[in-house]
Image: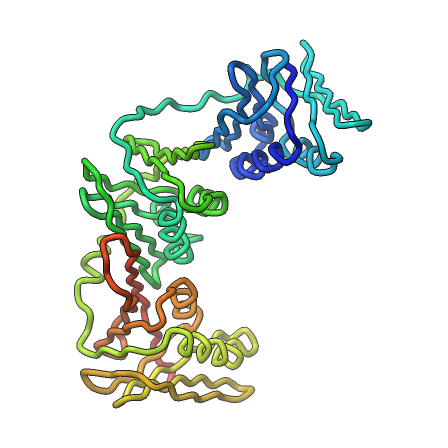
Length: 371
């Protein structure tokens, strides 16, 4: 194999492909990227759960063939090369020469035939979504994916698709995150996509291009104009989140998102004293929401203006769980629904609920007072 390709192009391609490289695998081939030159030049990577195929990379193909190269080594070599065109040439023993200007590297490669084959998928009935919307859906829910759950299914996110709506849901035992957007689909789908896949996909998504999503019984495929992300699906019964979110609560508060977030940020200076993770107390009364926290080192109290209907309530929360939700909501104000000191609160954005607008709901469990 022999190809010529620009350094910047290779850097961009490797930045995507390396997301699926299994750096800690005991199988050396999974630490590699596969370079393949046929009618077009393409690059592949996999950790046997997530796969990336970068297709039709702009390059001059002088000799067809394939070779698998250690991804970290190859990426470092490309990054440290001088600007310009890079030549990659491998021989029958997979010894690969990488040159740019007066710089020449020789590294051992592996036969391309040893690289794992990617599972096939049918390109029929794609579910089309803007990359910007998909990125927002992931960003606004991925923070509450369970990291250490004994149920593997909670280490992913539920993609629930109906003919007119896409819901993305994550749960971690303390909170539920739901983001929804209007779409057009010819089918109904319920599938759980691994959190790792979605987090890596989000990092690579460009702005405002169409993403074709294909779901099968065991696999999901995200097809973009330049590359394809695919992944296994997680098995298991996901939480019935609708049951948890069906009731808003009898107390409703509308408050400035930025003011509330800033207040929580200040309260956490006290609540995290001595790594105790003390709660913050929210007290709702008339037109005021009182935010306070106390610890051995001291206390903090702040009052925020709010529109409150339904009565008074005092309730305790882990401030991080509230702040995580507020970080990703872009609306100027939020709605908070509550019913009792030991019942969950539900946070919603207050923006215009148009068909192509993403709406959010966050359920957060309160803490029990130690007094």
